[in-house]
Image (tube, rainbow, N blue to C red):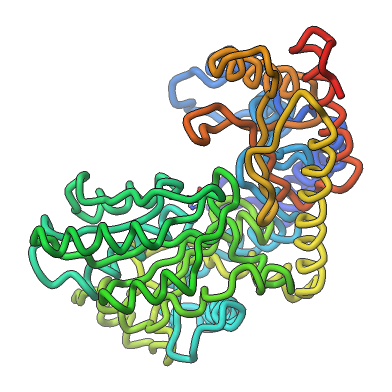
Length: 479
Ligand SMILES: Cc1ncc(COP(=O)(O)O)c(C=O)c1O
């Protein structure tokens, strides 16, 4: 007896057609949708507040609930105007790949389970390793995002370099580190006080001179420095640490060098990016985040490790029930994915990256990333022409930051005005910007990363900022 759990071919086609109709309309109208729509968000819970239903309801009505009510609210990270958080937008081609992955539901944790799809994923990792300049000994694993990549790197560094007492281990990163680096250290078992926040220079890059002093002091105090985290594109301003210098500090003190390139890493596909990110190849491990600068959908992160044996050593354990699956075969060179991270069962994550890269070619991505670099520079130039704001961070990659400027206001009043400018822009529709604190003062970030963001959108963004400055300052300081 077949059940409703097993739709026949006709029913499968019907479900797909209904979903495709909604999805295509949704994506086709993205430029007309608000980049940020918080109105009525508090009422959404009531729409799904019910006990577990015993009987089903029509697919059409559920799609209507999703697309008409639930999905549109909040920050629209698929929107071209999503210039706030570090998100790439989510390529449609990757979504199609994901449908194939989940519909065919093959298991890639052990190579022999789905050797074809495991090879596809290994190939993606090889492409990434080649892109960053890692040697053939390198391997890696696709994870759900930059946070998981930073955690996996910290655990690997701990296994490779922290031989003594865990409570004595110290980890170093700049005061601009993403909070997932701090979280990773805590989850990896370090006492919170053993995370060292190294001060940064006027361009928000780690200060290597102070870093060396901190390491020396820790050694003198009986600590075991074991890991240095550099950032290749900070979340706040896109700042890139001096990577060759960090590599030499790491070498001098025998530290594991991890580079968090979650945001900046894929700019390596461009010539300018290669120049800016020089030295990345000297790291022991690198976090990349395809769901950021490779425009993939959320849930696509990556950790690369110069010597894949280190990753394996930190994660591989034996078990009786897995021994038989393992016997199906192991991929020479990268090992089984289930032995390279904490995840055992998971989707065949590589396909959603492989399919768009194969279908569209790397050139399409290079062009899009170059466009983002240009657009960020254009935005900075235009902001400089608005007298009521000042740039706090020029784009090193595709993020910049600015704040309100007025000679007659103190710091507190300026912060209030900066906040007001951001609020006005964010409620105006087409763009969403976010705030952060730089040098103790509020700043507005523009992160030009969505693949759907082009010159017209950035021009609109600047026009909205100009109008917001005029409104926030009573019309006196617009340009
Ligand atoms: C530099 C950096 N590292 C790590 C992360 C965390 O990545 P994820 O949100 O994919 O976990 C982010 C997120 O914005 C980031 O910008």
